[in-house]
Amino acid sequence: MRSKEKIFSRRLAPERSARMVETIYGCKWSLTVYRLLANDINRPGEMVRSVEGLTTKVLNECLRKNIEFGIIERVAFNEVPPRVEYVITPFGQKFVRILDELEKLQDEITSDI
View 1 (cartoon, rainbow, N blue to C red):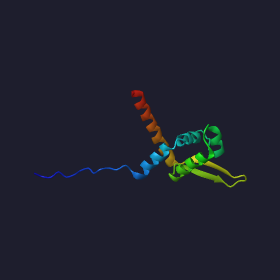
View 2: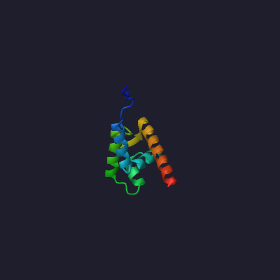
View 3: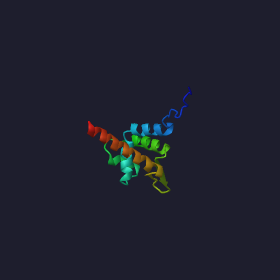
């Protein structure tokens, strides 16, 4: 009798992307920030004023995490007074589409209950 060869190996979740999704979904403000950016609200002060309960400290932490993952980019303008805006990167646009699909999946699960 021949021993069966293993065809498949155990597949682990991709460490960086899994950590990224967990971190972004764990931050309750990231999805709100993406929505703000999609609506052309891309300056930090304007973001804080647009969302009840969002503080500058929390926003800065959220923006920093998203920049580290390459989802958004900080654009600093050489002006007086200084001006900073944030934009979603091409990678970030792909990532946001994935999050949108996760949201649709959640809606389907919820509607089945």
